[in-house]
Image (cartoon, rainbow, N blue to C red; front, side, top):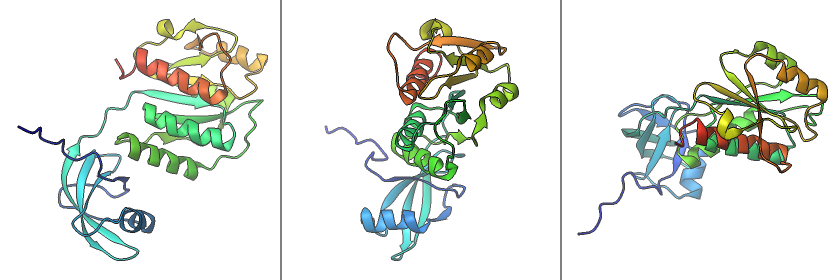
Length: 246
């Protein structure tokens, strides 16, 4: 007897929408999404798509009406409840555009709940376009099956971030001079990983971070890592030892 195929099929397009989703709700897509489904994927009336709204989970919807520049969908039923996002924040010194885009994309895929760009003495990027970073996070969430998007904060100075942080949230400081192995340092509970810029933290910054309450300095191994690699390696370690990979 042939196996019953999984439902919904994994090949269905998957989109994030701002509208609140519920059974039999009507969703009007923006022009870019309508163009993607209708002109790129050639989806016609009666075609199906997966939607998520960052609140109610994932739903399957059917194309009800379409024109060259617009599309209306009818929500049929829920296929996945909203995910339980691991309580991990990532504070990172922004890097150059290509590497920054990659960092945001992969941090979203790994399940980070919040992204905090932190400006340090050696940070080489002065301006960050939050709207562009959110669009990258949306695309990553659409591809990896997330139903919630990571929050993306406005850039903040390192000193301000340290002053404002909740001491109940453990700060894991990825210190290039060394620290406790990740397998021993990471523990369940709210976490905040801090990684530095391409040139590393200054000695003054390092001392300031280590003097902050609730800080654990961690080691990322014996090799020198690029800034974006270090951030993602630390996130992967936390997910494995304290997050939802167990």
